Amino acid sequence: MTLREAAALLRAAGIPDAMMEARLLFSRLGGLPEASLYGSDPALADDLISPYVRRRAAREPMAYILGEQGFYRESYLVSPDVLIPREDTEMLVDHAVRALPAGARFADLCTGSGCIALSVLNNTENTTALAAELSEGALAVARKNAERLSLSARVEFLRSDVLSERFHALLAERAPFDAVLSNPPYIPEEVYRTLAPEIFYEPESAFVGAEGGMAFYRVLLPRLLPLIKEGGFVGFEIGFDQADRMRALAARCGASAEILPDLSGNARVAILRRL
Picture (cartoon, rainbow, N blue to C red):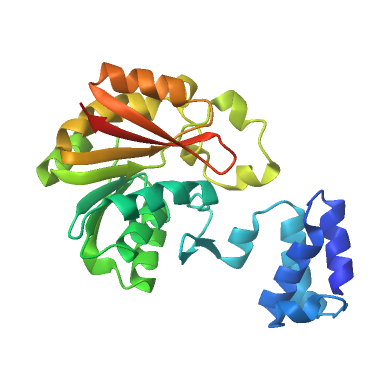
């Protein structure tokens, strides 16, 4: 299969950046420098390249095909057990990296691949983290990522339902924290069903939140605020249309809500502090 043939198959499958993605596959699978793929039409053996082109044409996410995804300043192993790290979530990480003092201890709830906790650890001094996740498959991926980044000694992984009373008791035993971070499921069911085909390869439980996407925030915020040190914060990734509801929830819980916009100007991160 040639590069142009691969791009044509991807284009026919409705993939907008078909040639770019074809170049990526040829580079990674054929060991070809990406720069050499511009203005040329190399060929790779069908048994080497075709299965991967077919997977991408079926709209399987590229990150799952390649087995990893770049995020913040790191690269993470991914599998269908975990949500693929996204650029939007880097905002939450960047705020934590800038806000946490040296030696801070924080928690990351719904850790998935571990990308939030591990990127914060990897870019801060002498910090430690508790990373909680219900899925054993996701925790296995997160542990591998911690090992890759030589961070295993600085993170405690905990398998638990973060909405449960048992987890709250376990978290309280480890309190206080300088921060609690989370990218919980926050997409309403009716919105989830309209998303791009690639989304449905990822764990639905990592996307869909009840109560219009607010269920996790409603349960977690009042439990988390008492566990935060003076001057600390709770940081949530939120949906673009959830800022007003997050402010109202914060007010009911006796907290302030600073809403940080993404590069498109949409609400993306809520930083919540006790008043």
